[in-house]
Length: 247
Ligand code: URA
Image 1 (cartoon, rainbow, N blue to C red):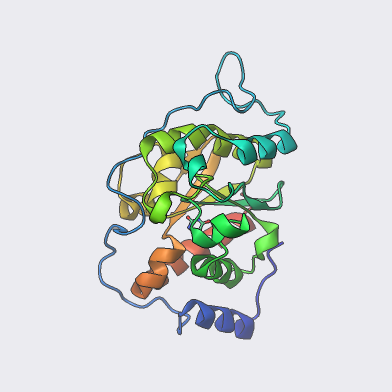
Image 2: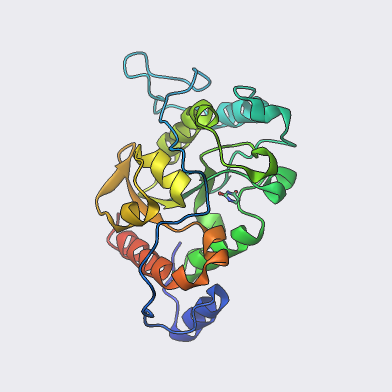
């Protein structure tokens, strides 16, 4: 999946990410990511039994029928976002991938096409993955929220709660070796935390549903705040190391 890039290819990819130099530049202190998502912390609440839940633990069982899950997401009316969506956005990629990328919610392009991360932020994400030798089709990409919030507003806690079982079921099915949480909403939701992205990013040994989690900036934030790309690059190198170590 993740072939080692030679130096020229790596430099080309880094340039595409807007990182001119291989070494990490000194940047201003990493502020908490301020723009993606709201200040309201999503509450981690289990959803209704849209997915098959274990009787005792109330968690999705390991034997999740992927097509049923896809079908349920497609037809979901668990929150009011279904009233304004064009379509739900299930996720895309290898459903037995070693790396799962989790973002926040579909935007306009994703709502139109039915695929996560296809707009400008999507291209940025592709470049970020490519920078460490990972092709988009070899990962599984999903969002916390499967339907677009109107005007791209931040997802509300009840919407996050309604969708929570879907993401958990996806993680249980894919069984990735590592989850890359991009942005505050994904990181806080997966980790059940209200800490800032800056703090979560700095932490090691994080996990969700038994899977190691690595936190980085949302690609849309990096497009708005390119000075943070050097820090994102540090995160990506750590992801690369985890993959190489067989995580
Ligand atoms: N931002 C996200 O968090 N997810 C998408 O699918 C697109 C943009």
